[in-house]
Image (cartoon, rainbow, N blue to C red; front, top):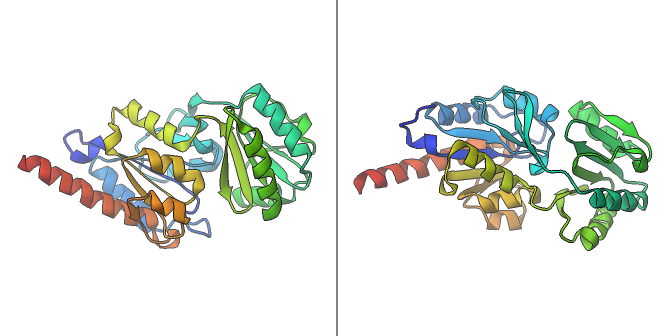
Length: 284
């Protein structure tokens, strides 16, 4: 890293699904090319995803990220892919796990994906979850009944199924969440919960602290409500053209569609902003 470069004092985080990769789950070539330009100038770039480390590894390893820790499981964890270890992890409380199990039992047609510190569990009929697994090729353990899933170290829980059912369980979860856990819409057919305070925004800020980077030199790009906290926290926020209205409202820059290289588009915008800042500082 070029310590004398104005870019070395910046940290950029990017969501993966619907942001870094396109709707076919492929990586537009513009994105890694622009990321390389940014990191070659000394910039710090990392990933912030709802995925667990196993499902992020290929993307992380194939990008020029320089070993910077990444946000995993929607902010429940910060993972060091260089050392292959979890640097921090925030689990749901025992009471939250008990509540989650009871609520899930009332919605038997929904599948549940449970990311723990080291294992992915699937519970339910399996129709929705196995479609997800087939796409991602994740390693997991299956339990028909959620009551049988080991209760330790639940970092993120995702309910997936028919849209109307997901909306129903989302309302129930929000009614009992209190100060224990947060409820986040992660797609039109899924809703997830995590411990209060465990989110992408808090995790990105923690990585910035690890690197000695000030808040006013942080940036991020995402595409959905599960990126809202992250985009609210950073100094410069970007979103894809397909982002919901509420996400666009808090973004400084609306990039192109993820199919067309949204991350590259955002990095070009950010690079211009950094260059302007550097020129202004040199004129003072």
